Image (cartoon, rainbow, N blue to C red; front, side, top):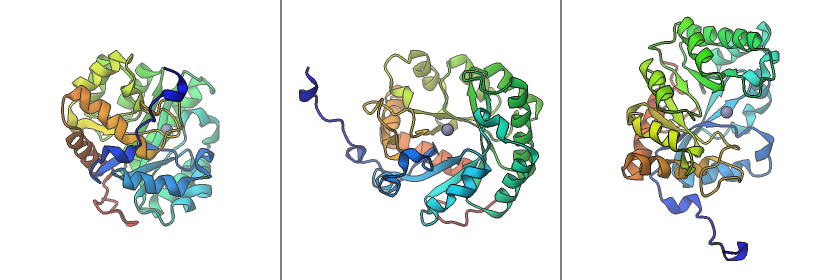
Length: 285
Ligand SMILES: [Zn+2]
């Protein structure tokens, strides 16, 4: 079929999902959204995405960009130094985050933090030190961590066990592993967030893993602007496209997409301690 005759991609509004979905992980403060951020936040709401967690990649991004969401109560916040920025986490940065978490009730989790041996931009020892410092902060604040792990599964598990997080509330972001890895994560009592690549036909190991993950431990995320689900693969991702990820997961689970949408949304509300109707004064319980 020539490009000209290709049917248009379905828009997310056409999925007609109920207004109770949650995108647990988005980077809406990135420059990729500078031209149409407000429009896309509106589209998320009209596509059933009631709440979106914006992940600030460190205290400087939080300080510079949080005003973008000043009048968007549906956006809650996650803050942490990504392992790719491990050289930007001196004690002063941890202190700046501590102050932010203590004063801003919209900040609901410490992340994304972890280990990334794929890009390997920074020495592994430094990544691990920065990871541990932020796990300590999460423990001190009584907030859950959101974990980034790429090509570093065994080391990430080792550090988390060592820091006493087995059995504690924790979200494994952007899960792309197999059934064995899912089993280990679930065995520690943690939650798993599923991104768009679950919709790619060739990700069979991930499909089997998702089939095995109990619904009550599952959240959904876009990780936008990256990792769009089919049929938007390769295009810029945004929170409204979360419904296509839900569709793929529902197909794997053999359940109606509305029920999957509701269940994963409820899980996120519970995990992050969100109020059902958005407010700026989420309870720091
Ligand atoms: Zn991310």
